[in-house]
Image (cartoon, rainbow, N blue to C red; front, side, top):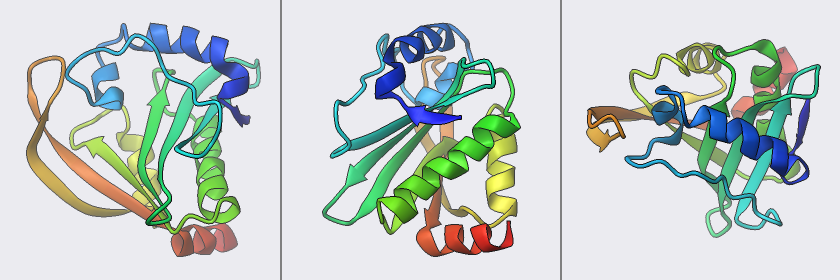
Length: 171
């Protein structure tokens, strides 16, 4: 179930604190350092934020979108999976989140950066690419150093509004 992050700030912050303790969090945060608090914006002008909740009401994922209103695009998507595996609930909620961004809010496209060998996001990425929701724009070689001190390649994926509309008609 997709809900505004603002309405779930307390639960989101609890899940986030557990998430950053895990080694794989480096792939979602894509930072050299740890940020101990997740900022929840009080409006949707610069950032649109939602959470995915399971059937028990537990926050299982966070979706954030940084907005560039000058270009009418989502300049960066953030996807944090708080479970140990991708599951149908949060993948479908992610697609609903894209629908909010591209159809309801009318942005032209959205960009997603991911670590190239991110095994924690790879199943979701395969689904998104297989169903032509996203396309791979490119790979930046040796682009970022994460908190484990290793250098990683970064993939750039994007989705355009027309691709989401096509998928919704087929899907």
